[in-house]
Image 1: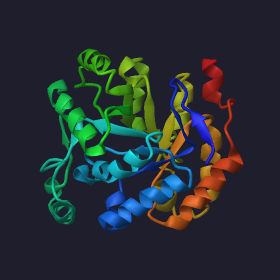
Image 2: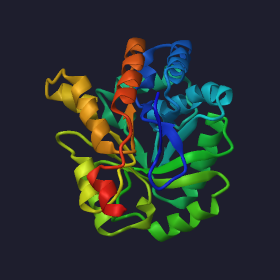
Image 3: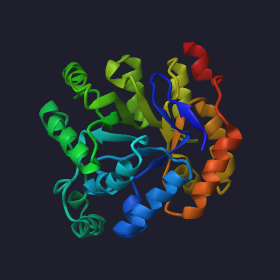
Length: 277
């Protein structure tokens, strides 16, 4: 798959990145490992995860792939944690998620914006991933009103040996506050972009480049739209040199995404990029 260098970084990643938020639905541990290996074989070289995804299981699932392909890049997150912790057996995780449909508190994420908790979380993520460092470390849906950005910045800067780049992963309703405040914690932004969210438009309005976006297919299905290739083609064009998160458990889709990325290519002419040049 075509590669791109994410604006504002030296990270070379695939135009489509593999998101693991729903990886647990792919089946057994072997089935999940086979799916991740197939994604890499089809050109996905950037993988996005979080301690809350699969309650730590997706980070563990990525360990083998990352060990086999040291050049692959990975992003994890901090701030939202799993009820019961990130080292639960998969069978317990599945049980919690099923029960959580009736009793939401059983599977609801736990938010903690203390740096003390974050220090432990970073070590835990690295251990589960089998890595000495993260390419991207993103605050997971932070609340600007309760976040001590200065304390976080001091800590993240002190972790440069374990974190190459940091930023935020947020929905657009939260993103606007960070952009309006020009908060340095948002030096890198991963946000949703679709008919409802319009993340690229918001970034453009503040003269920011598009780095990583997500949320296209889920929004399309919600609107009963089936022209997914058209939607993703438009998304690739809007993203300029950015990367787009995609999650799928269907092996045949992986080649389709790779072909689509290669067909569209990479552009330096998106409105956001024009504003910052």
